[in-house]
Length: 463
Image (cartoon, rainbow, N blue to C red; front, side, top):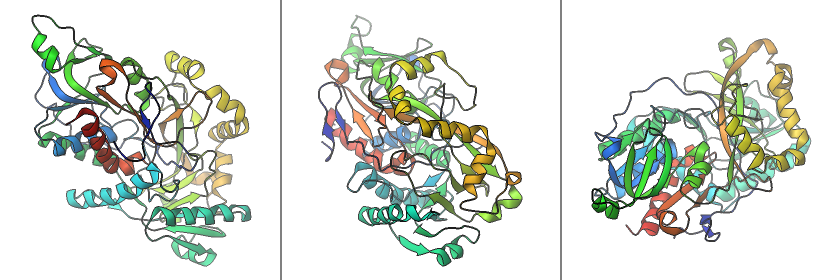
């Protein structure tokens, strides 16, 4: 068993307890098209595997890669509902390589982020994947923010984050000439990268090691095989049947789910606990016009509010040289609702009836109203941005892309910010490991998370 995972009982499994100290920067558009990956030479209707990973995002692909490199004799398959890999949360994030400063000391998030960032930089160097270690300033612009900033600095030191410094106004100007602030934490280890490029590299490693990727495979049902004369042998060796919306199926011995925005539904399909429920929050970005991009050198972040760690507009440089401003956080009425008026009746009903969203809204109504207000009126967001860079005007920005964050909530309306992994009970539940919640910094932490998942799979399934 992985140290520090806490067993929650027969209906859930293991979880590292949630805490309010996280912070997210995980929205934005999918980058340009990449070379498509082959499907491994197997037809879904005839495939059988030792292990199947459901979900072709960065966590699923990193986990598949880790498993096949550790157990090359196993047959391992990845199922992805889209025609391309890594196009949702992985392809819709700001691309920040987080340093690990925000998270509660000794938490799973803190350990995996610090470890994962080091592994990610090493991996990119090995594979020739471009990145920029452009650093980040977390800037206090009001006097009352300074104690929180200093506490954040101490937290980063406890987490072992490299190179942290508390700096004053004159040093802020040296790092960011156009930024105004009273004090800042300088995080030189923070970087940026194209996470979809990283994820596709994981997929290539996986396939070159003998793994199979099946796209256009939207999982509809997970059940135990019904033995019959024609399939009794496979039914004994590969007892779990995963069926898609087209009626195709694969059989396997064990399942790992990394389904992101659909992690709760996939858990329900397998007969496991439906909680925590996923509530989608859309994050809209603004873009700084190209002629104004000189105003920002590296990442500029506000001092986070621990009550809502994923709120807080920041300045993010991109690998293509553009500058993103944002995101906000507004409720999305569709799990993949990247546009303001995207709507799904089923997704909306689940939000209202199954999650703790109503309690969250009533407890924090002013925050929600403020986020909606900022989403509607650019001038409000610009006024906030001017606290950091006064030179920015409404004429310097345009509306940009958006992404959707899979926010896990418990029934009492509490945000679940730490990673959550669980299994189930019974013949199917004992053969499944669910990655139920992998919020930011999951992309930064993906290689570290995959190692932990490989350890858990090995322990749980006795490989």
